Image (cartoon, rainbow, N blue to C red; front, side, top):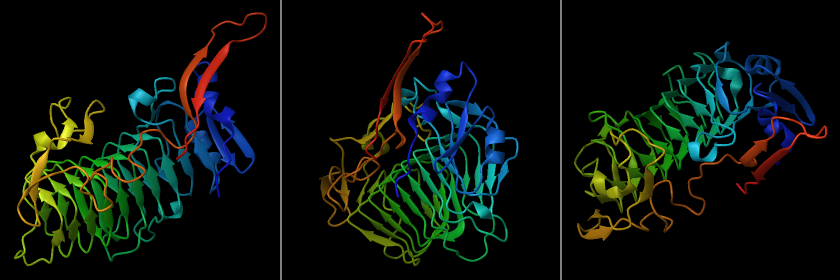
Amino acid sequence: MKKTIILPFLFLGLLSWGQAQFVVQNGSKTEVYNNINTAITNAVAGDTLYLPGGGFTITNATIDKTLHWVGHGHYPSETGATMQTRITTALNFTGNCDNSTFEGIYFTSTLTFGSADDEATNIEIKRCRILNTLNMRVSNVGNPDLNFHISECVTGFLYANNGSNCLIEKSLIFGPVHYFVQSLFSHNTINASNSNRIIYGCSNSLFNDNVFGYEWGLYNSASNTFNNNIFRSGLPYTPTDGNGNGGNNNIYNVGLENIYTDISHSANVYIFSYENDYHLNVSATGTAELDGSTVSIIGTASDGTNAGVYGTATPYKTIPYYPHINSANIATEAVNNQLGVNINAEAQSR
């Protein structure tokens, strides 16, 4: 069921003369608050919380109810009219947060989900940036179905703590990937430098159509399958590694300096930069796993598109699904008792 979006609420942050406005929507009922903490406190499970641009601190860092969080995005090129939506607090979403969703928010600190006796499940995070660690669970006992879905995000360290059935897709990952069980990594770009422990403690997971620009890689992991990926250096497994890791149709020894169109804007290539272009370099070649021949890295994903975030029929997108504000011009004085307001917004098809 598609959510009804009342457009004026998306513009309140622009029209409030410097006072941020936070809108809580419950069906056709809406409430507007001047403080993010009041908005969160008064929201009930299932509500949608619309956040304006700006940086916000949440006083109560533990949240224990299902909410749907919507911001304006995090890419500077797309938020000139609204500013990035940034939350600067390290947050804990406990077990009653099942089915929460997040879109268009820059989290500058750590996110932790679940509690020792109650997992947070069915979490969706889309078109967000998570600068620090994303902890998907607190306990490390067992392999519960978390059903996390991370899509079109920029992330740091991803830590599932032995949780299973997670889908990580079309995301730029700039940190290690630890302790995922029976999960799927599809069309991601993974750049990290952390000795030999980028993919650590993972088991029975599928890694399909990704780009691995990491330094070193697979450690203490078993029964994982790698198909149609592109590797900066050698393959992360051998037929005799004894851990059951394997794969098909991968391309390796491409070289980090060759994989991408332009990563010259990062002093450290393992740190994300908005100015970099993470499209594949159309001239790059590597070694085919199948027969050792030299092949192009273009069009080698299992679906016939490119590996990495810009593959699939619906590639990586930076703008949240909700109507995007391209520009806003607001007069500072009224003329003939009328205030001039000119806002240009664009609907999003996905």
